[in-house]
Length: 337
Ligand code: LMR
Image (cartoon, rainbow, N blue to C red; front, side, top):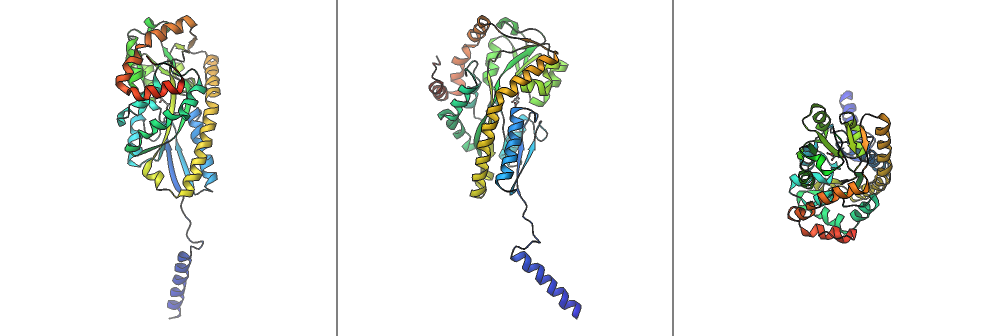
């Protein structure tokens, strides 16, 4: 009998501790899975880790951010589907990868020779066009939080690419944008969409002959080891949209969302402030390794490329629509045909 009374008393004690929220029950953190396809040692990789550090600090550990780099969770196309399904909460895909969603307007950012430099790009995205583009994601269950920078594309093959004619017949990997598809086709190349994680092997085995990307991606993926010639052309820009699953984001307690927004704003400033230097350092490292030969275009050669690729702009109207082109032209203070 005494044993029964003791057991009842113990159960009542445990129950009361649970009801008043005593030390017996620890609250589990809200988990944000942040998936991306590049290495940690790149502007995006470092940006994701900075967001993790700040988000966990500002929420006093109420939020835990798990960063999955290098396509370790999902490859290019799958990650956007996974975000919509809520299997992953946060991504930072390049804006070239939104077309499978039926959102083509982002591809305007891939127009060749559009942004003069990184500052011009960053300013444009903070303006009207950046907000306008994020609105296009709303009906897809996706909320845009920020734009991250990764500088300008180089282009490579196993032969020097100096003049537009050098692109004739080249099988070139592109990441998804129809604008990139178009400017390579205009040059006589055969573009092929392929997931980022498959590019190294495709170059190595000759499935494709060449590719375009930024120095930080060339270095961390070792593309320079399977290409003999890289042209530091800066012919197009690589940018990311940091996005979240809307249902998840709107379902967060308001105070947590405020802290996460602050963490994202600071991680964005950080990422955009290191992007140029990270790519300069990566280019210097590629040069030092000496595996691939680097080529720089003269002003006259650059002009040949610009002239050859110019028809992309006319074609783009039918693909991305006039509205985004007008917004960009206004923001950048340029004329687009
Ligand atoms: C690519 O697929 O080439 C890029 O989108 C990779 C990246 O995210 O930087």
